[in-house]
Length: 214
Image (cartoon, rainbow, N blue to C red; front, side, top):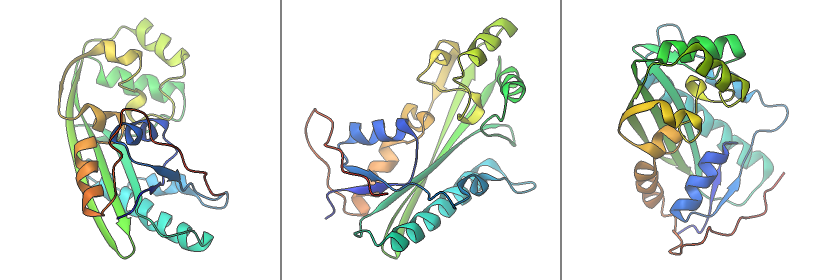
């Protein structure tokens, strides 16, 4: 059994959700020379489910190399990637206000999918899962969209929104995993971590954080 995992993600939401599960974790973030953003580039004609699973597998491969390069103690590594899909169209993280406005305008009054892939690797073994949720937005006025963009909440978020933010007030219906829409589906994640023999803390308080290695 392992009493902690490495989280190869900068997302504070994923850390929060691991705390909720009672999983001790240490960050395993990219080095300065790593081009982590390039891993999220889409391929021509790629479907959203294929995309999110491919990117997560690439993240796990990079994190395994990082762990070996730094000579850190062995422990399971968790990686995840979330994307928003409108039909076959993949909506990633907006590069600027215009892109965020275009994304939110396209989601306004329509249903879309949120896909989160999760992968856990331990040694040479790995386990993976994908969560698919449906979200329907109410119609959004241009003023509402502009105010949300001014809050800077859309940046760094797939589809230009975060469900735990003010955007929750626009969501008329959800079918699927709320935590998956946040960025880490807890049901699927817990299953993978059990397969990787990770121990969980059974207490109400957040687990103690480990000291991160540089």
